[in-house]
Length: 197
Image (cartoon, rainbow, N blue to C red):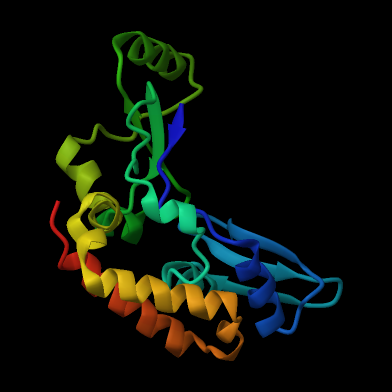
């Protein structure tokens, strides 16, 4: 069993998010209230909630500054050796209409497909629609470019990661606003789009 993963994140991102929002002592809910959901900080006397997409926390994640260094070497986005994998279906149309949240399920053997069909027959799971391979790949394409593309071979990428590591190590991110995180996201996304699989 596997879960697709674009990378793990240091807990320092959560600590920094709480600090920047003035709620150091609070509970953090990374995603909730539907899909793609909201980020929420909850303290005894205050709640801060924002849509996940485009939020400060999402930009902190996507900036690569807080990504665990080991995750940069992972090329297995879909948990390819697992008999079954699960992922969010980041399709534009799906994101515009789906608010509760569906999981994309990839099965890789007949026995598991039979078990999955039985779960469907018994009402434990509902298949909303069948996806073809191209749809699944397209819904995860940006991450696939980062994980399986030639991006790591480029000097630009290696320099970017050295800068990101320096920012993280010396906690320079404490001076960042969402605007600066967005610039890092834009730059990283541009590098990914110029990558080839």
